[in-house]
Image (cartoon, rainbow, N blue to C red; front, side):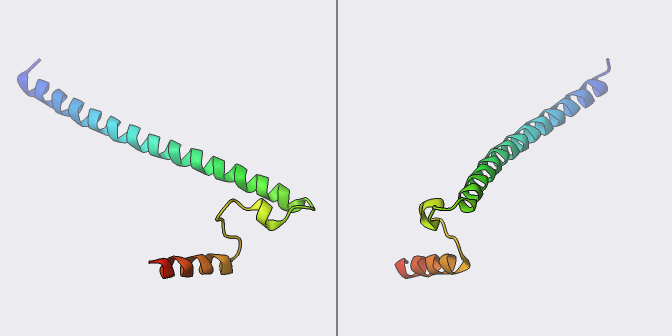
Length: 84
């Protein structure tokens, strides 16, 4: 094998290894995001089932600190600005 070809192969190998590392990192990030979204889906599904059942107050269904309406979200933002 010629020196030139060895150099080309070494360069290609280096580039491919870097691509592989980048791809693995992106896959890990996407897998983490997928796990979070699955948890969110099941939380929403659980809350939907509770909403459809009678006898549960809204405060019992929501997680601590979770906003339910746009007004709740605005009030929480105003509280945060006042605390700053």
